Image 1: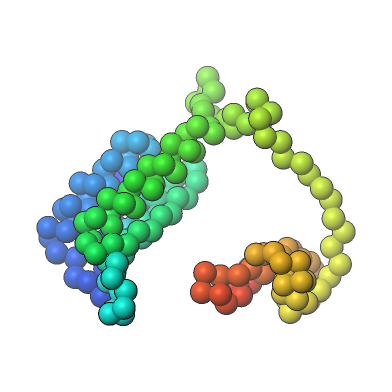
Image 2: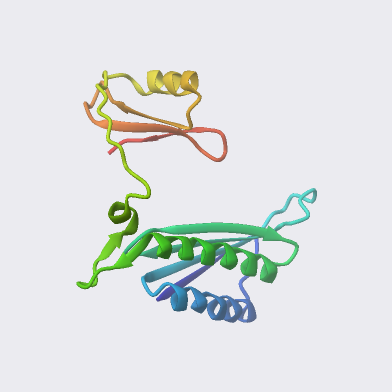
Length: 170
């Protein structure tokens, strides 16, 4: 497992780097599929934010990509909080997936039918991204999938965390 550590408005000291590397080893023990763990530590410069020590972690694996973020008044505490969140995500994932006798991942829900995926077909009228945003807003959804009138490809518009609108185009 590779650990990538970045700092934003903070210098990553040798002590902090060692602390992060030791703590992130727990991820590998709980989730052997983890290939890369990206840790970004940052300090918010706004004096009105008391919990200004932020840690964002992204775990990249041959399965799902898991992300979590936490902030507190201490960077070490933020790391502990974010790793706790990731452990919960890992346990939730492990609860949904198990290995069959061939070593392949099998979704438990598809076998036990506790949750069903129901396919619905929709005719998609081609539209522009602006028309898709209008439809998304009218429906009150966080995202909207549409057929782009210019490219004839499936696209997605969505609300970003910063409240701007994102557009995914293949």
